[in-house]
Length: 408
Image 1 (cartoon, rainbow, N blue to C red):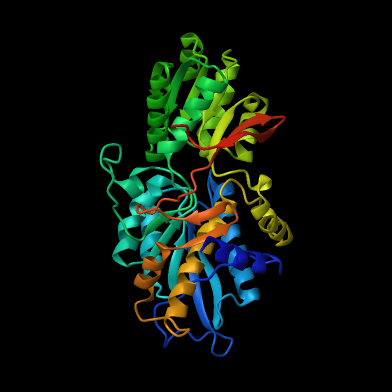
Image 2 (image 1 turned 135 degrees about the vertical axis):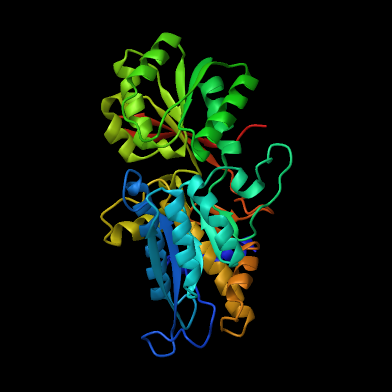
């Protein structure tokens, strides 16, 4: 299966294209403007405005590129694709409303997103009830796939939910191993933003760090909407910790890093994938130098499989970069098309009346060599690609310094 998928991918890439599609759930009301062509929609949910919009727009653009190239290549004969991007402003309530809207459009057969794990929690039940396939390129909270008691008993919660990003059950410990074993840092001041992603990531980091022999000198929390962290910066300086681990996103993480250094604590801030953004460096300025961020997957720029994606994206006229999750977003969209293609091929080239349910079932068996490497899902809907990367800010950019998997 892997070799067959690789041949398909290679064939598509040599024409300058990467692949995606989506399909509706009725055969009699989808005639588009191109005669007998069926028009179908891929929903995209991400923060397209607000503090996290740089990452969200990168997600949207990457899915848009996939839809356009699928149309160009006629990846599924008789089908044309469009995307429906909805802005959740990183707000769970808005995300829940978007889920209801996407479910209400019977042409939507797959959704890429959301960015935030807390937003995903507000969407999963709605999508699952409608059998609408959802694949996130960015959610990392383990409980989204494995249940609240995942540490002792893994139990899948929603059959329609998948993700191409690995989880914080791996990401937090990976950062701890790098900090303790490679950087030789022994004491940490732990800070998080109390949100699903940030708090969970910081917790898994602390657990592994102390297991290795490190010491957590203090655990603290901030309001993610605040930007004045003078008080906590002073506490961090007085703690004499070797470094700070921050569980949260770059809009608060960057000013926190800046103010820690301004307070006199010339120590690195280490965090997760939500810090690995060009905007982190913009907001923290020179004080971002030397900070670290882990991220899911290998750096796309280092992968042969991503060269065509990067070239096509750059040629696509997008003003914004594909950012942290662009490649993973494309692979999420590719997974949708593979599931759709399977269902259409199994139904004599047409969409069945229960297309959503059939496509969700087909997604479980998807396997192909994608932009970020091998793409497939385990029994919980998690990606089987567990590669992680550590980045360090050097000369104003996040530079990969280590890529691998969590050590046993």
